[in-house]
Image (tube, rainbow, N blue to C red):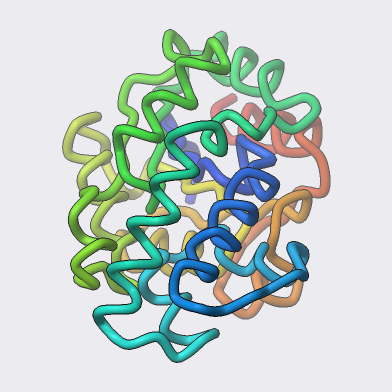
Length: 225
């Protein structure tokens, strides 16, 4: 890949340190179906993939329980969990630097799109992005969301941006981000300050992994030079 003119970013674990609000809301959802999970650190696993997938994989919930747990999650998350988060150090500066270099920027998250938009606006970042995309609210609730959700959201963002896949990078902290990038023909770039490990990112095909927002800025801006 010679150069890029477009970068897509994951939200949770890449732009936003969002585990506190998500973990508390997952805990609340589990209690609704009779499961008491005191370990909030364990629930950070829910950051990234669709809720219905992780509820099923981690706790063996059936379809009715998933519906109840997701609805309870949303009940607390929409009330106060959504803003129990903050941008990672240096992220705003990195985004501004990329924007100043003329890069098109977008958000591609598996989180329901209305939440993604609210958080980006809350952070005062809306003017930095040309596209802000997320999943359908109904998909998780009806257990229709799958591990290919990120791939589909990335494709949606690319369509809005009218971006050439060969000149676009996808930045994220989990294997789902790297897999979605590879499946769409994008340059997969990982970050270790989120919720995935370096090993996870490497095994998923990341061509570059940044440990800080400053490292990420230098890499992305260097590709656009």
